[in-house]
Length: 136
Image (cartoon, rainbow, N blue to C red; front, side):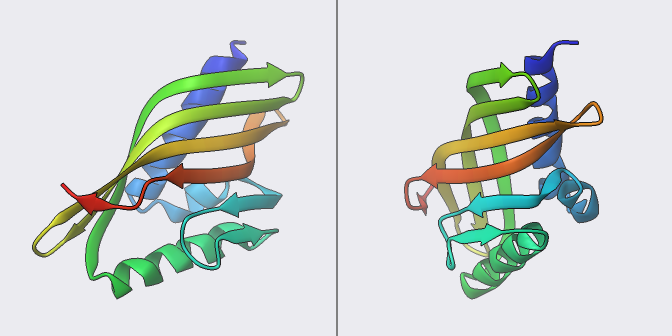
């Protein structure tokens, strides 16, 4: 079993699920006590409902900005570490926010801590760190 490849696959699949609106599948990738730190208020979510609260905050932010689509393009892994049943990964990422008349681009880093549960990597912490979105 290649744990680094499994972690990369888990993160890529999670991003694809969020991008394609497969919300239940994406939420199933979080541990029950996940912590999420993101660049929109209230900036931090933790616990069993953190994933759904984070996605609700993202949807409210998109509505406020009149964004019709939010898509993350996951870049290359900068680092993946595995120590027993825990993992850590940093990926380059680009978020595109599309409105009726413009596309905003935000580049940054997606940092994720994972735990191995029954041979499945689950996200226990996730942070997005990036620049403010600018016109493309």
